Length: 402
Ligand code: CTP
Image (tube, rainbow, N blue to C red; front, side, top):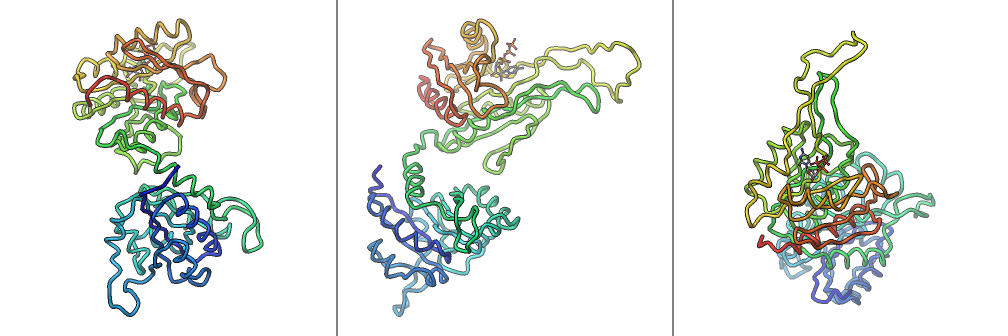
């Protein structure tokens, strides 16, 4: 893909991998990007500014003040100028500065001023890369929405072998191209997603629940976020590693709590996605104390839970889109389509229970997507993030003015 017209700020910090930034600069410029390089002082020990200036066809910046001239290198302007701020390689030191708001050089001050997305490619020795302090700092950067181009595994400058090598320039170029090719077609849209299982208490220590992992719901939340939406997640208890800071996130336990949260958000939402595996029934009464095993048999009286998708379907306005899921074991398509109508959905995504590689706890899925119009499309077995992206593409086809 051409990067013509794309403005990239390329930060280079003190790491042996800095020599690779010369090659990276060449690749970016060759792809058509305008590249402005900012070096940290210690990067000078590894590569000369002349090399990078020649390859980027622009003077390299490193200090707050232009040499001799008394003119200020305006980090605020630099931050506004760029479409993407890429730091490759980024040292453990600069990672720590970015994570903690330290701005003692032009590069870190520009980071704080940058309004554009930030991508970083760490490079360091394997033990440094695994150190809890570095992990914690990277986690913080991730929570700020920065994209981390994870270090690759191989031989390191120290002579040791492990994870810590900066991602190869060709692979970084691919990530940059991927970033620019991503459309922001849900920008300005508010989306709520129910996900995960619900837990219905029996007594203070027991509950009724199901095997939902929340993986599909979370993949959808991430896909909406990447495509520019403002994402509100209402999640049942899950053990998935998630990045809550990137979303408006609410944890709930029971179907009733999920319903209350979704109902409160609903009037403001453009899109509501019901990806949760809501328990259909809950104990009529929650025992105050732990139930003792006195008798040979125990009956628990269950009553129907509120159907969140159905109830909010009754309140749906013409400019709102509702997306539901269905899990069927028989008459799959027919049942899914009747659920679509009953719950006033625009799209229903039918999960296949019969396919190997599709289902609750897996990272892959295969779905059949039905529109209210009757149109439908089927996917192959793919990673859940790819399925999520296809579902978003289908949502774009819903003839509703959101
Ligand atoms: N759903 C919901 N609230 C419920 C039950 C289901 O919001 N109490 C939503 C699910 O999130 C999903 C859709 O409705 O988007 C269909 O869920 P599913 O469990 O397949 O259907 P049910 O209506 O529960 O029907 P059944 O279990 O009888 O197949």
